[in-house]
Length: 182
Image (cartoon, rainbow, N blue to C red; front, side, top):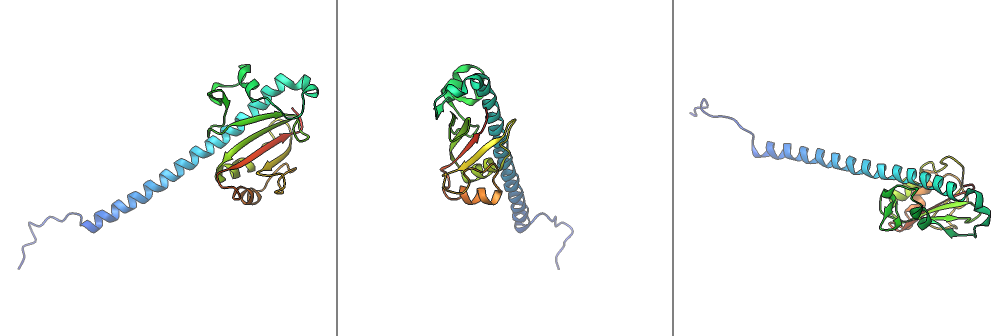
């Protein structure tokens, strides 16, 4: 006969592994949610940045837009103006919070000002393409990856349409927002 009085019960190895497994799953979920919230914040900051760049371009060029040649790139001029925040400047290049270069063009494709961002991941492409890009004034069109893909000339893109277009190029997507007024 065994004497169970002096026996102290602890956690078995299986119980310990089970608890550690649950903790690992929860930690993984928290990390995933955190990374998605960081990416979402960068997406929002990118759209805020484009709005601010549009306002600065308006201040600098509104009265002379008719005299500016087609496809004039003004990113460096905006950087040198001193009117934009330093966090948009990455070693003399206008960049998104993700680090991609932003090209700002005047008088392009029938619009007054266009913003172009290249080398977007699929998730960045979909999020940016489906956000409200109207800003204070109307958008002329949104172009994802290629003018022949069915998104050229439209002012809004559905999530399904954006996902289809952004999946074509994986991590080399580009988006162009073209506004009909400055």
